[in-house]
Amino acid sequence: MKFMLMMHAPRGEGDWAVSKWPAEDLEAHIAFMRRLNKELTDAGELAGAEGLAGPAQAKIVRAGKGGAPEVTDGPFPEAKEFLAGYWIVDCESEERAYHIAARASAAPGPGGTPLKIPIEVREVMSAPAAEM
Image 1 (spheres, rainbow, N blue to C red):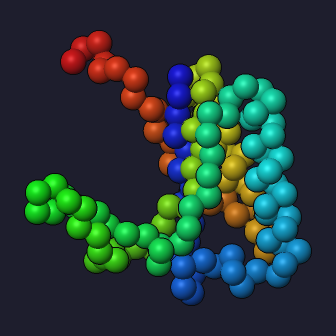
Image 2 (cartoon, rainbow, N blue to C red):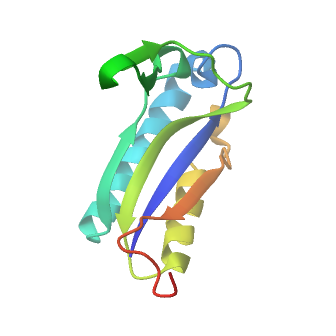
């Protein structure tokens, strides 16, 4: 079963609160994420993972005249959090996906304190449910 684990980061001041962390705390956070990705890769559970650029670099695209892309900088919804990155994991159960999400949620923040950052878990749809 594939699941997408989406990490929602607090906005803080500007796009990234992490930009104001001490360098050693940011390095510890990144090292934690690399270890988590290696462990998931070694277990054969990691299908993909990426960090995303901040919301200021995001674009909104709609189909314009003749289907051409119509690209704008916004408007963006008022939100206290934004999607900062994701993992796609292929694991045996929803419970395992929850355990992986909890591990990612505990990534260290300033001073090494676990961030407890919210991780949204959704199953990747492969076919309509049998009852549909």
